[in-house]
Length: 118
Image (cartoon, rainbow, N blue to C red; front, side):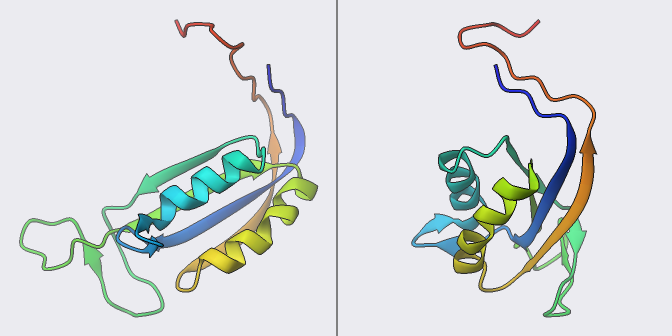
């Protein structure tokens, strides 16, 4: 069972839904690398509208020409583990935004292997 409490670091990566790394969705590559690095967890959130450095507005509205919606990948772990992972993000994220925030983990408890959720 994994536990993480107290001071932590949150890294949030903003990219486009259609950004890729070697023919794989970039957000998926980031999540799989975070998992391989043993980080506490990573989640991907799909935005419904937004814009970034390109100043193009991307939206999910029906009549929009854009389908490349914004995606945020959020990873939380100890500062040491997150900072050790940053060189991989530097390699992967050629266009986008990467931010770091101090945070406090109040509760993070993983399920034991084979345990069912209720």
